[in-house]
Image (cartoon, rainbow, N blue to C red):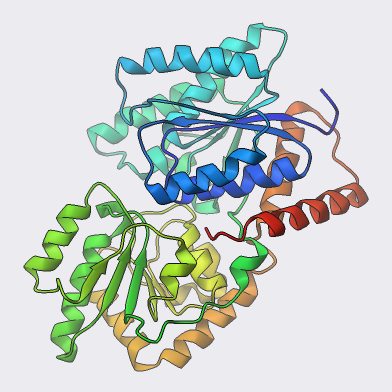
Length: 406
């Protein structure tokens, strides 16, 4: 192994949402820095939009993309999947196995441990991305998943968290950290900080993300209904995304008489969706470090978001502007305030945008992750001159190949 060039394999179950965006940017940064990168993921999930992101990533993956069926929950089929994964990964001879999400993390630690007795000994890195940490430790399902996480602790070489909140949740629900760990924030590309201009017929509000209860899609719909009653006028909204509960949410909108007020567009690039609305709403019940919040702020969009996960870390000293989660009435109140004073809302976004421009960048994210790999592998840190040169080259390559949107 060259002291600076690594063979890196990322593994996740479902290539969707913020996780595939994270891996897309991270893997491209790693490839641009001269590393050989591969990806293993499920073959049965992902919208056309998500798969387009995966297709754009393929040319940058020297170790290729391996896809086969991975179930979300624990099943006997996991045995066959693990056997297939073992064969694929062994042939790639990685220096780093990086698992994302609960299932990706489980596979990486299992396969990485089986390879430990061989000549090549990859380090096993795990990034929860929320995952099992979203489960309630007082419920049966939560106790099961957290017990499995604790069991896997001994087979982990390093933990990467996307927020201080996520690290604290891990310590609270899983236990004390017994291996090296680091918090590395998700980051934006240079073009993500370009302002987005709204269409002339832009809706009052736009929701961008997975359509599921955890993300608060139902709360957004109910808040639109509350606003309609409060203002006595038609409130227009865009819901841009896909998910297992789309039909349920469409039925809910129709039941409330909002079928002609709320448009379900399907998944699309975040910035395209932003242009279709005047204010972004993130009504999540739980999060780790959501890209949509970073992207909305980077684009200069007025935003209403809940106080969950790592979102307060994005807002920093402005976190008091966030809304308590779980209440459509509180959400509606914050949305009404934006409608009453849109220029003030834009000015508030500008303040947060300025504060994140140096911390939440893809360039910084890529460098910190690679330096963590080096730490686990016992590779000396590069000099500041070398790091600056590598970062500049990576940033240039990333900027030139990431114009298609998130």
